[in-house]
Image (cartoon, rainbow, N blue to C red; front, side):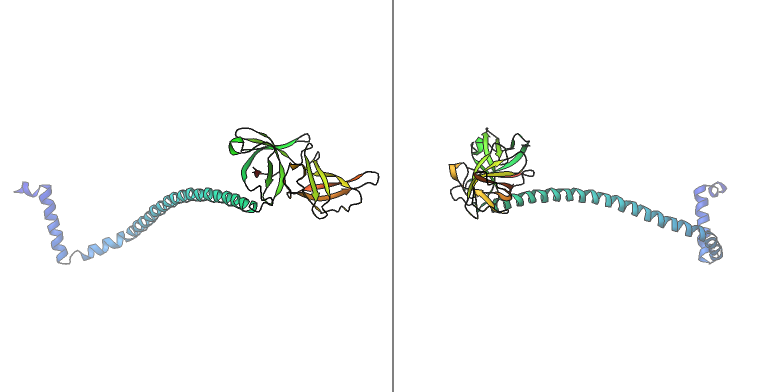
Length: 263
């Protein structure tokens, strides 16, 4: 019998039964109060630590979640940026096409849009390369323009997939032109820089700064009515049989990206 009461399991049951009996009689209230008073500070610290630890876990979890969301947002932002860039390029190209619809020469409505991918602006020659060639319908001596009927140059070499365009500012370039305001004709040529010169203007005709120079269409090299530039400086001498003037081109040849070739 004594061995049964010394068994750990039986002994534990007896102790629990005694505590249940004492508690039911209210005899454990005082010891409980004392225990809770003694352990209250420690329990408060443990509780606060537990709250802070839980907050830390939540904070770290939120940081990780925010980082993941930030990565996703960056990826989405990059995708949107790429889309916006493509839309801007498309919008510029559409605007370029829209402006060019008003080409003054009704017989030259078929245009080939090309990108500039190389250029040479040295003193000896001035040209650029475009990404369209014979397979696209580009031929030698074709006129190259910008939106708004701005004259750029002429194709001097066309291969299967690209072409070489001589710019109007090339020293070897010659263009039959006229002053729009007075209809006085002359010959435009390139110089060593980025400007143009118009020669063979008859003496006795009034030539003024700011007048507009356009193609005359004579000799058939360029369609008539294409804008070349404006007179910047008049050079006149009584001993010469004709007048000369310097022209500021309407085209900025240092920033060309897209052009049209007239078929």
